[in-house]
Image 1 (tube, rainbow, N blue to C red):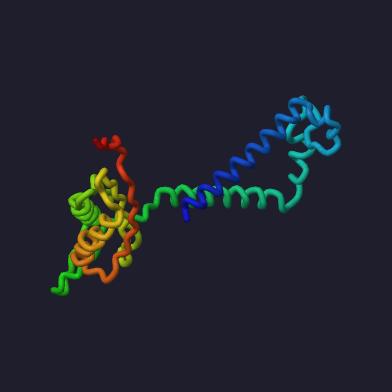
Image 2 (spheres, rainbow, N blue to C red):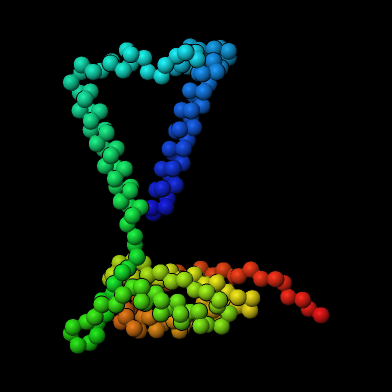
Length: 196
């Protein structure tokens, strides 16, 4: 979701800045005057200013002007702060609560679980490297696993064994009924084998 919002905001900001820059450049090059569009173009010549003095002080004496300006700026600052905080927020799970059966329970480090699952995934045949991230909420964690397969690795077999072994062990160790997994499989680059 955050990626989509970032891309949309960046695209809109970029388009707005490009349009404003093109409009100012066209005015600076006197293109509207040369093309006969001076009547409809906001800037009629290279010596024209973006905002005239009359435009700048037009609503200064109206009672609604300053509250709207200040309110708009406050809203803009709050939206910018929300966006920055959303960038810093991570959806990684740092700790899991594990029911030990004695009524006490224990806290399991999310990073420890990631390292164990990654080590077990890397021990599977055909897997060169594995990266594991525990995301979601503490009550409903999910695993994101990236597998880098070697030249002899088979994607279907690697994913099947990953689910049956590493993920099943993680689910049993944490006592979770379900542990959704997103697996991304890539193959490592290698030189082609010669057949003689």
